[in-house]
Image (cartoon, rainbow, N blue to C red; front, side, top):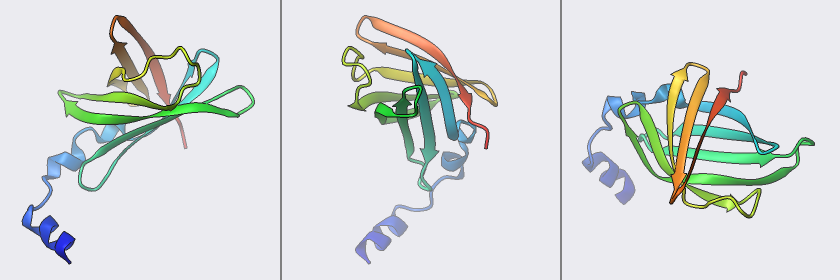
Length: 128
């Protein structure tokens, strides 16, 4: 009951919070160092972002993944910190800042940096 009251006291969720960035939602895939990366981007009803990724070998066996944290959506960009739950390769950098933008409805551009290391790639929307 107290949680319900607190949610009501906070007021309604702004409509733009759930609308902003909705084109990012869904599953995305890319080839990364001989792994198939699958990202799932979602947003809760209260507007909180979540990015979870898994990495698979050519036989479909999982080799690792990451979750995002410290999300920010600004000027058409989703920005978050990558935290590996398990690294597919031990040499991959932890706590990279990742910025994703949409090139078109089916193409997501990722740019990442961690210290003096940086990179970029393209992810394609997974069709249902």
